[in-house]
Every structure is written in structure tokens, then in C-alpha cells.
Length: 134
Image (cartoon, rainbow, N blue to C red; front, side):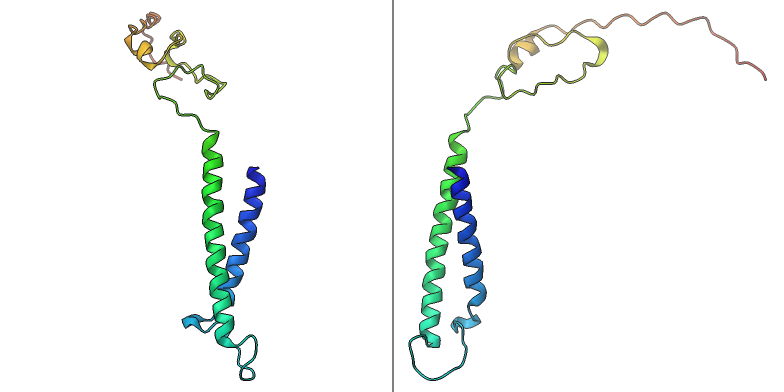
């Protein structure tokens, strides 16, 4: 459904661009000289182009609203404090600096209430060595 609305939307956009480019500035319409009177006079052409542009603008507005409604229908509201095991969570886990245990299940508040893990004691340094001469 969304693809069909997008295609119709793009056709309306291209038709509206063409109509706007056909119009002459200051309301002259096509403004092509020609004989006096007739079916498509300068004034009649201007009215047709103006009305058609207004109709296409209304259709553009409706298709834009339709697309935003269709896109919003699939979206579900969620809290930032939700469990990260939801389907929208990334599959890969970020690197765990410091070698601490991975975060346990639960929301952000559960993780914040846990005491921080104790870092492993650093290895004892070797005896100091004097720089070598070459």
C-alpha cells in the first residue's frame, strides 16, 4: 500500500513541477501571443493552470498526510527505560571495556541500582630495569 501511495505521490509532484514551470510570472499563464480570442486565450490558460496547480497541491497534501499516517501506524511507542532485549535492540553487543561481566537482564534502572563490579587487581610490575647501552 505504501509503495502505491509513494508512486502516486511522485507522479503528482512531477506534474505539479511541470505546471508551475509552464506558468508565466505575474499571472500571465502561458502568455503566448497568437490570435485574438479563441478557446485557449491567455486568460483562459492562466485560469486552467492555476486551478490545476491548486488541485495538484491539494492532492500532494493528502498523499503526504497518507504517507505519514501509514509510516506512523507501524511505529510503536516505547520507553527509553525498557528492557534492551526487545526486538529493536541491536544484535551485536558493544565491547566490554575493563573486562567486567556483561550487563544482566532488566531495564536501565535495574542496571543502575546494581553495585559496580570490582576491577581485577593489576599484575605486579616486574623489577625495575636499567636502560641498556648499545
